[in-house]
Image 1 (cartoon, helix red, strand yellow):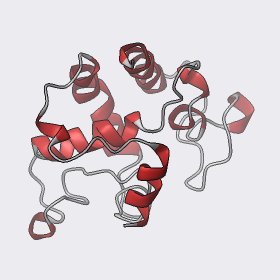
Image 2: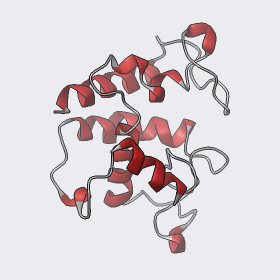
Image 3: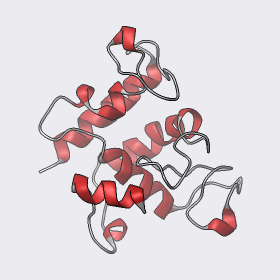
Image 4: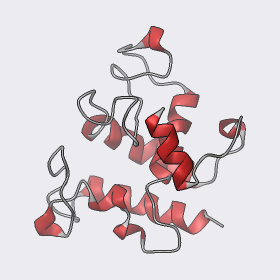
Length: 146
């Protein structure tokens, strides 16, 4: 509930049924390129694979939307994927350079221009392919926002 409160304060709550709408073009990029990165680097239960985290993430074999499927190895469902997309989008700065958004600065090593992250640096260099994929998605998503 604390995470929901934070998202309400951030103005990211879309309202009931938001996940049923046709997602923007950046959703396919997220699904293909970003979700696998978040699964590998961020969705661990000791990190963002927990409901009390603002960037609560769902992943196969980890945290799931339906408690009955907790740690289920199968692919996450469409609703879980859309929630991950929406939550990640909430960590992008509106009207600013996406590379300055917390979703890109927090996991980047401080010596590479990032900020301190409780889980340690997930990326040592912004030239890493997975960091570049996250940045390209962030740019595409930022351009779509009204």
